[in-house]
Length: 268
Figure (cartoon, rainbow, N blue to C red):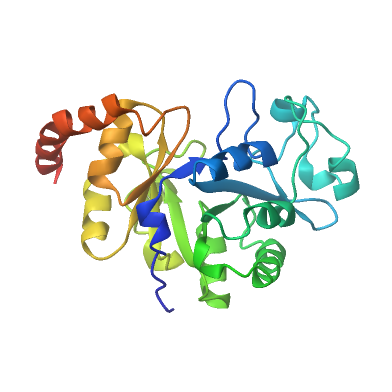
């Protein structure tokens, strides 16, 4: 399968996790994405399928945390999803609405939330929708599901496709956890880049593959320590609840850089 380079915008500009949200603004909303656009940050978002096969932007399939309704997005048609309100009063946007809002102004990092093997319908629907978007060089796609990544790699070379991973995966069997943690999964998924949990950096696996041309995007930076680690051991990072332009944080990065370099050398 052809290896696709990570677009340069995703190595230069940090990625706002589900947009810029806080205690008053809900994640994955047109409001949170508009705020990220104002600051010119790339955005990360999550997609799920509705009962009638439409792509909506929301992290959880179950709506209890965000809408107070104990029902799954996948069991509702879009018309019913659109009747619901998130906890801040926003509505759940469709991916089409978000693409229209962004319109190439920043990069979009799309996370496919699917536990189904391959989930061909979701992948095909996504690719058809993105085919109508005029800024393909500002889109990347990623998933924890290696079968989804492998399917996408077989059906498009328009986008860089990333393997999400971390050191610990709850509920998974020991072999699968090791397969994901060690990134041996790349031999199956054929992903173009790696997206790894920042709390698990640095590690020998990411260092090994990064030296062999796999860009690493760290997630999710929420404090000064993880910001420092992300700047040292990855090519870019997804962030939230932190002002990444704060001068103190910039100074902190310089002060602690040597410490983390030494830590990296010890672990390799």
